[in-house]
Image (tube, rainbow, N blue to C red; front, side, top):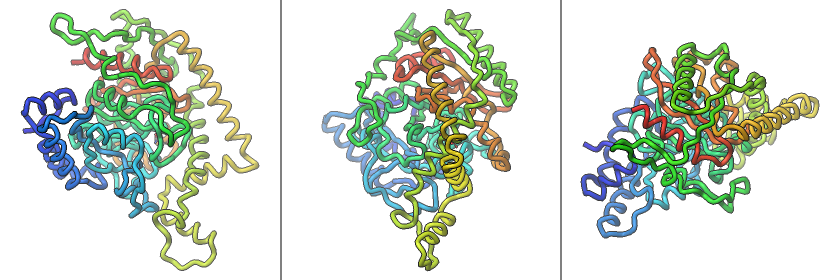
Length: 488
Ligand code: GLN
């Protein structure tokens, strides 16, 4: 039977003729079919994935050069353009829309031999923290199907969790990769803002959005990042900084036969005091994180608490700014240019827009568009939008002070473990609070990762969030790898 542990092991098995890409694809297609109840995929590209696998197998057998992601089976969140394939953002408004070009990040994966197995369910337009806002039904957590997988990239997290793909590609505007990774017990990486091109990613809040990676191991996340990162003529916000060979730079040394020491793993660690005293934080998560920090001190790390009086401003600032950007980004979905248009015959253009958008957008998306239009309106612009921008600037300043003294900031990823389906639906504010620890990294543009280190006594997993200065993904990944190796 096919079994996946890491890309490196998979490639070794391919070279040794112990498996084939076709076998791998068949295995994942069977797995997806057997777990349909989880609702992780909106569409599976079965025929195409098998054809691609056969081509790759033939090429390898002919001794042709194999790509870095040769035969790696990847699922993509349904907010990423893949030419000739449907793209819905899990919304009715884009029903039956077909992508006319491929996102740069996805093209880079394909160019290195990856096999795209399907598009994954998510919250509508990536807005949500539980994957209950999809127009195509909620996704379920594979550990306990009465629980949510987190959001908005819920289908992508569950896909790696339940072995429905080797890797998933999601997007993270305020935690949508890290939070579901935490709820599902997998690795979830959001790189620095501008590390990966956003060309072909449906925009939610453009100054926050970043493509991210779900994987089982840090090595796999590093390799996929290395492939997707880098400059792109189609995205003016992407950085032209050279892309380090992440997968090589985090290679560990063997000590007495045990893979453990990693070159240049950072040692100076800060944590924000207020994050651990937040009333919404589950007491067991607090205790476990606190004792983890103590253990790090015992292992020789410098671990220090620093004040963070701005904690309670994070969620409001995030929601004011992202709603404002969303209201502008989503104005293009008007029933004229894309997807759904009301069937009613309406002569007045404004009425046509109104009816189409009321029919096409779900409740949460409508809430954000209204909120965003409100904070951008002439009478309230200064009171909300400008204020939130000022807080954002303060956070950026604070962040550079922190990283002048420390290499990393640690925190819980989410204040609770996965909650029940329907449990948080009655209040938008309660749902927004699930994002308290993750939105900071997007507000200031730094990279952040959730690593699956813990299991709660309620049986659900939870992670440690690691953040570093912008473009220090090497430090972030080295430290995370060390923690994962120490776990086993
Ligand atoms: N839960 C957050 C929101 O709803 C984050 C979403 C995301 O990162 N795409 O905005």
